[in-house]
Image 1 (cartoon, one colour):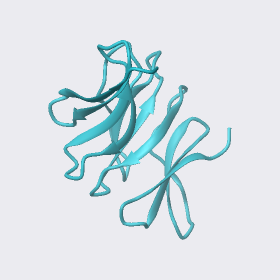
Image 2 (cartoon, rainbow, N blue to C red; image 1 turned 45 degrees about the vertical axis):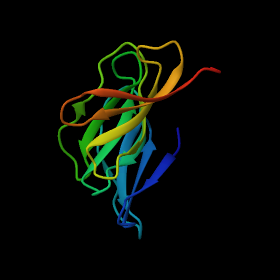
Image 3 (cartoon, helix red, strand yellow; image 1 turned 180 degrees about the vertical axis):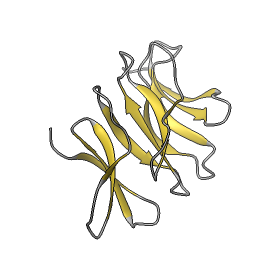
Length: 131
């Protein structure tokens, strides 16, 4: 499995990407890439926080896609979602307090939600009734 799902850091100096099922970061000018995740399942869809300190990503390490956080310099991975639905991050609130994600959580339609990174509180933004 090759390099996929590139995400440029807010500073424009680093690039997060998925390779062989893990999330990696590398300087844009080239150099050594470092893995931020390392497990047998698929980690994908890296999204940088506005301050560049965190990367949200999706992983199917628990049977469905859940959203996780990892420091952009490496460190402990923190799971943010725990439902049996799939939650995939796509962006952050400008102040970095919430992650924007897509899921069908608690509704028959796919929707856009936010999750507060500190409290884990979900908030529905919009549902897609045409799913």
